[in-house]
Structures are given as C-alpha cells and as structure tokens.
Image 1 (cartoon, rainbow, N blue to C red):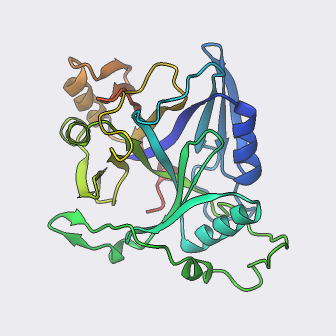
Image 2 (tube, helix red, strand yellow):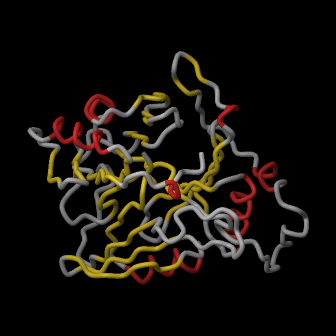
Image 3 (cartoon, rainbow, N blue to C red):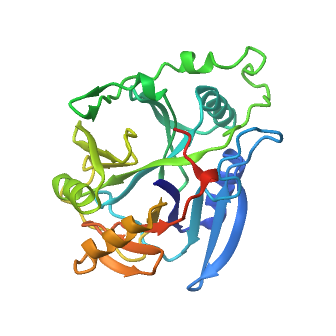
Length: 308
C-alpha cells in the first residue's frame, strides 16, 4: 500500500496555490470542477535528467476551492499534518534552504530516530511535515515496536550533505530547489477526539499494525514501515468531530495493489456506520471522528513505489 495526494478544502484557492507554487515549486497537473467547486491537483517538479522519477505527474496535493467552507473549531478532529517524504538527507537540506531563502516560516524541527523532519503551515493553517527517512537498517525495534522519539534536529548535520558552493550566504540567491529529486506522501497525521477508540478503529477494523504508542500518540502502518498513519488528541481531546463543508482535510487516499484486501475491507465495514459507498475498485470509509479516507485499488504499479 501507499498513500496518495490528500485533498484539502480551502477558502482562498489563489492564496493557497500561490504558496505551493511559488514557495514549494509545485506545478498544476490537473484542474476541473466537481459539484460546482473548482479542484486543482499539484505535483512537485523534478530536475531535468533526474534518474529518479517517482509519481512524475501524479499529484502530491489536491486543493478543493470552497469559499463558503467554515473554519474548524480549535479542538475539532481533522488534519494535524500531511507529511511529504523526500528520498534522502541532501534533498531535505536543499528543500530547507530553498524554503528558508524564500522567507518561509518553520514551526519546528525534529529528529524522530527513524526520520528527520521540518514542520510548517500553509496560509490556511494546514500542517505540513517534510522529512527524510533514516536507512531501515538503522531503525531499532523492541518487542515488535519501532523505537521513535522527538528530539532536537541537528540542522548543521543535515546541511553538511551540501557542498559549500551549494549553500548560499545570507542575501544571495542559490540554485537549490525544494524537492530536487521528487517527493511522495509518506504519512498522514490526524487529530482525533478519543485516541483509544480511533486506534482500535484503524488497528482492529482497517488492519493497520500498531507500530508505536508514545507521548499520547499512536503510530500505525503496514509492512514494517515506521508509520503511514499517526493519531493524537493533544489539541482535540473530547472535542468535536469533522463537520460537513469544513475547511481542512476533505479526505486522504490509500492505494492498495491487492484487490482481495479491498473486498475483505468492504465486508468488514459494509454494515457499520463507517461505510459510505463503494465500487469494484474503491471504498470510502469514515472514521469515528468523521474523517474520510478513500481506499482505492491501483493494481501492480511498479512506478509508484515509496522511497523507503
């Protein structure tokens, strides 16, 4: 399985597009209308001649323009951040300096033992993480759980991946680009109102493995990856569920290559309140907080493997 582009319902499409295009170097790959609302799909750019072409024209983010969308309450469930995975530390260093040189404000930096991360927010306060994984052979597992933590990021060490010629002095323009070797959606981090209930839903009903539970958050995944989904109730404990036509995360998408998994999942949820609709190749599921996920069959797509 892998994750595909999350869809964000936004009030100001032009401001959001300008941010992702001018700051992140993303480009529009598709634009259409659905139910009277404009939808724009954007993807990261790639250097010419790059040997790595992951998801070349597949969107990394989808923006759904709804000027009448209500703003969510501070304690409501929804998106904590979507996480953009880059293939290596040099790409992370290049992305950091490129964004910093354009005046982007970062909200934090962290070393999670299995990965190194930058944090920021877009103009409508949608959380974003940009990260690279450490090699899998460096991950430590204890009793079947991956060891994770949140400690200060050594930015100097990350930047040491670049040559002195690549690091611009203050005030100078550099040729460094964000996402120079492409990017993928690595994981989705959600705010939930009841961590125990939501963890049970994703673990027991949807079949994610619980990789770690630490600092009041659950990290779930498949196939041994540190996490494809994270849940926390740091800001949303006992808060409200997602409301119809609320700005923020409209849905996120899980792509699977095993059609029998999709069939089994349909049978699990078809008679529950979580089930919304299905076709032969996709199931729309709503979690206990009203957060929607599309689980879609994509066949055996060898060109769409995640970096790690």
